[in-house]
Image: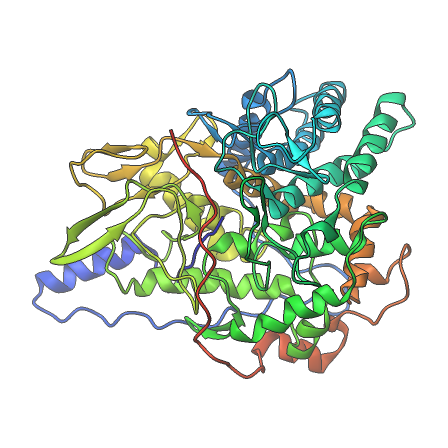
Length: 541
């Protein structure tokens, strides 16, 4: 999948609009557009008192978003087998990535009192048992996976490969396994059923044969089709597949060698540079800056690449979030309502694959697609996905909170419903043509008709991480995650605590490194990169 990019401004959009109208009425020239500003440095711990810096308080809306988004996973999952739909209400098939997010959602529900521990244990056991017994093999039909990997989309009832276009997916298996390992660490009681959860999680993780997909060692292929064999594209940085290599290197049974991370990061220089006033490791669709962060707390831990640049991946995602907002404020394509608090490009639903006239220009619109801007992934058709902003809450709460509130206030009557934010909307699309999905709202453009699991999951988990670091702290206890990070060369921060090898202190303790973190001293490099691999399939009914 893929997600997006945007921008920033000094004044709230409504106030700025009122100023522009007033000046126009007086015959005066419109005020110049605010210029992009670098993301401010993360606040450091207050000197002397030992207390962490104050963070913006979450308004009540976020509690409502959490509860509704949790209910998406609880209500739509098949109670018989634990399979979670890729999307709802169209609900054509299950997504193994959605299952990974669902397994992460259930403990969040326990902690908030939305379900009992007994209910969540039942649902988790049902899920893990079902995946453990799913038939595996090279046949084109009647199987759920092969060599420990699972097909991207499964039939909601029997769990078999959904159709011939569905690939055996390395990254979606990784998202599933992150949820599996999260369950392994959370259900830690001396109880027979919770012990079974831990044992099943270990079995599922241990049987993934990561080296089988290493056609071009040490990199890992995106997947495999029984009809045509291995996908010729490997996972190279920088994108959501960080978790693929972390899990693959940590495997106690089928590990890949640590040099996989070195080769993975070797391609980073193509993506490091200045974009929209930020200097960072770029990836256009914003989900690439979010997915692995759902489970891994990257604050203060660094691999060799980030250590050289004086920041960590968390700060990188913070800068990417500001670039998202900056792009929306600049709004170079003049889409309707882009601005300071309306932003977010990522992989999402869209209205239709069509070419239409927009303000005297022919513009290309898409249905489900990766959307984003940067050095490589460049596509923007006016479609905003709330998950791009909301799931960035831990990175930049000072800009995410007002964006979430404004999108809810201005568009919530048709964008916010039973399970929170629908997937996406496009205020510029009002063409009277057949739609692939969603609907036209008179005077308000197009709005999606579905919720999508891989967009819902980060919303719920990242709000939770902002509140109390719950998902992060549970995953810090998982030895597989720690081992994978250490084999990738990560040091510092929480990796220096008990449970791992002694490591260098985090960069916050080094004044020079902290200064580099704030200023971004690395040299900006090439803005031209090779073509992206083809988008991953995401058909609709």
